[in-house]
Amino acid sequence: MGKLIILNHPLIDHKMAIIRNKNTDTKTFRHLVNEVGGLITYEITRGLSLKEVDVVTPITKTVCKTLSKDVIIVPILRAGLGMVDGIQMLIPTAKVGHVGMYRDEKTLEPVEYYAKFPKEITTGTVLVVDPMLATGGSASAAITAVKERGAIDITYVGIVGCPEGVKRLNNDHPDVDIYLAAMDEKLNETGYIVPGLGDCGDRLFGTK
Ligand code: PRP
Ligand code: URA
Image (cartoon, rainbow, N blue to C red; front, top):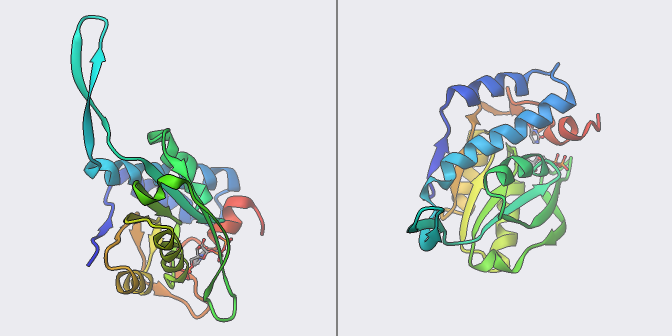
């Protein structure tokens, strides 16, 4: 079974209070979603493997360490895009693949409409990112999509989750660890997370 890690950090909690507030404007919302994405990534990347490299400093030769594997960020469109800049601030060499999913409003089942991944997807550390883990359908389908292209080392990075989504992801992809900034109470009858933050894509892109 994959690990479930809920980040517990005063800065994340503080930013989450602003993100959740319905009166927060689009620019601030987008900025904070990116920042929280970065803070979560700082924790996730603690376990990345390193290789030794020779470096010449202004003083002498020495041996340093650099990341030994590629990191591939795979945002689930649209809302996952809102976390990419924050993650790339910390890992500027990360490559980005894209997977487009939307939820059918009646069935709540995900529909894939776009997929493009870098070739390193088969050997790198893949971070599938989407702020909202609601039914878990989109995340599960996106992870299936990267596995079909040969990805093996996969982590899910979200902001707000709920028990229903975690259960689905654990069930469908027990090999995938789940990182979240907050674990909320439940889903409502229309598939929104409670208390949640509303429709993340709409709040990021100002489409409502
Ligand atoms: C939202 C969100 C997730 C998905 C989560 O996307 O960004 O991708 O719902 O729900 P699930 O866990 O029940 O699948 P949405 O379908 O609204 O598309 P959008 O990001 O393009 O707005
Ligand atoms: N997608 C969102 O953007 N918000 C939710 O609460 C659930 C799914």
